[in-house]
Image 1 (cartoon, rainbow, N blue to C red):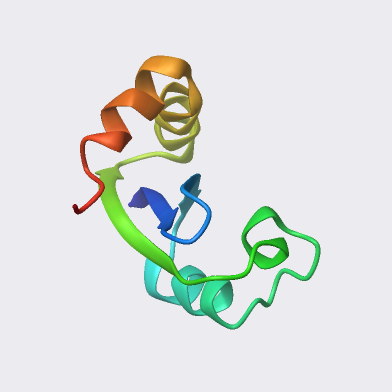
Image 2: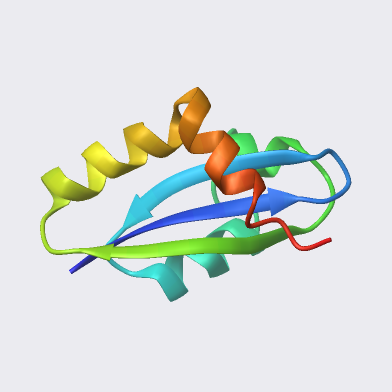
Length: 83
């Protein structure tokens, strides 16, 4: 099983979309800024999980990740941001 997820940075109003097989491990890596030159580590402020979706194959997860990164996908994710 693979998880497509979206994080939101309140300070900068930015959304990050990714996919992984181990969501807990990936969230820890984002929080600890393990990926030094990544999008999430370059921006200060806290990243909050706003959306998850579980899919069976990596191919499906990559396809859904791409959809969520589109204009319509980001508009959908903006509805998930807590007010």
